[in-house]
Image 1 (cartoon, rainbow, N blue to C red):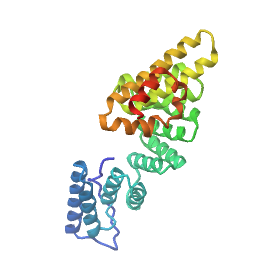
Image 2: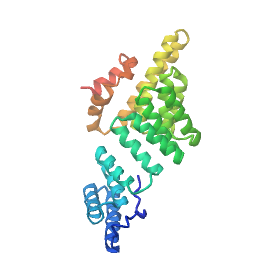
Image 3: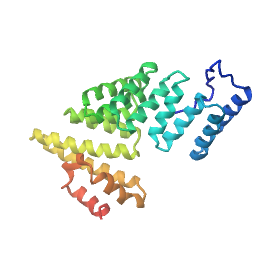
Image 4: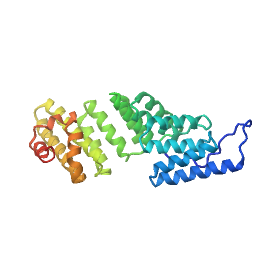
Length: 277
């Protein structure tokens, strides 16, 4: 989100505001924006409070407050701040994207899909469409998710987030080879991204299961997929600092059901002995 510092808020003619109040509110929001960029979130919220003290309906103050509340993961309060903003200002694609993020974090996936769709209608872009696809995946709906990821990649072929998401959607639809191709393409774009490395391990592991079900010549490719899954986990651990590795292993790796096909492999057991102690 980017603070809308140049918005000229509508005024109720029955409640005229002096120019001094407008200047103070605007200066306070600009200060809040700078504080937010410096990650001084408490100070940014205080500056927003100052702006709203002199002008309770000042839209940029509510918007900046929403941006900062999202940064500190207070999503319910951020949604309320956006509601206050929308009472006096028009919705934009940026506002709908923020709404989609808030709904996603609150596990309100249908509302998130609606918000991201609104954002894409106002200004089609790959991030909005990809985020909509991820919301569909949260609802176990891989087919509409793939459609959204396809639309995102039609606009931006190198969007790694959309490639990763489409890989998962294709996997759930039983298309292991193209799922692997998508996640590997995402990793070529962002080779050190921990989340992509974990998703790659999961996709390779599940692709091995699909290949095993075919039998015959596919068994060799299934074994290669299991090796790739372990390699991605090893790379993922190498991206972590020493103090984070065991915590991440316990919190994310051990609880990841998609890795089930590789749990008895020598490579996985070696990693478990190293990081699972």
